[in-house]
Image (cartoon, rainbow, N blue to C red; front, top):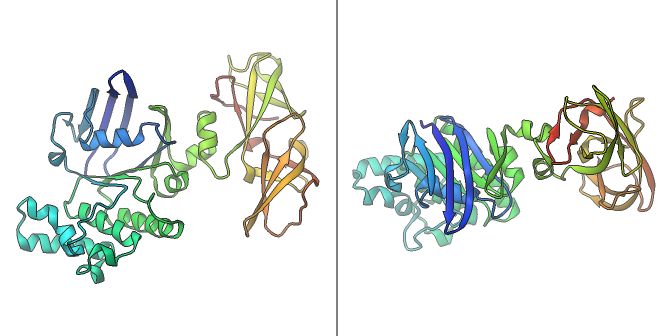
Length: 368
């Protein structure tokens, strides 16, 4: 079991600072996922925790002990990399046992740990095979098993599924979820740029952008209450629709926003937020739209279908709304019949609309 504290962690390569003072508390036994676009600093932070990168300033604390100057092998951490890095001439058993042999672990203990890890990962039948005789997913499970046998306090995963095809990614993701269930006391930190992996695996997600943390929360928190426009559009698939508008009237308790598509919204707003004349953004998720008639007074929009994506169970309609340049996506069931260039109207419940100020920060308000 291990608690981690990241206190004002900075990392720079010469004049280029890639981590800008990261503060994060990770509780023992949590499954934390670092997510964000390529180059946002998530892998650099993971490698800094592992000791593979030197922290420029700040403190890494594990169970109350400062780890900045502690050798990677002494931190109680095991890391699973993007590449499997298996020894091709060794069997699965030998690959998993190698690190323990080098550390001088007794033979009986090595055997017990390897066989237990193989059982957890369903590798029992493959212990005498070489990596070339395994599928990509099986090789990745061997790499995970090699980490398990060390009995680490903290597991680090650096985009472990990125080299797998779509079907193997799903299967191996399920294996990692099962692994966590079988090791509830072990802290796990997982890096990915795939927000589906993040949503399905994490206890909490840490969203990164340009070396900073944008938001930390459960998958449900981030999906329902994004802190800003970046998180709103990064979490969720398809991404949240964003409509632009302007505050045209404002009094002490409410504001009237005129959207570029011609719709006017009446909303309450926090004191000191949304000044008259301020640009605003309205966020609506594709799955929160209803093409059928909505409840009276729900905001209703009209657009023309430009493209239809048929995905079996559902369809994604790409709409042109008046006054907007970006396509507006609507998710509907797969059985409904629609045609390109067809005009449709759809409604959205006020509670499903998110409002962001001119700086892109979420504004707590009710749509009237």
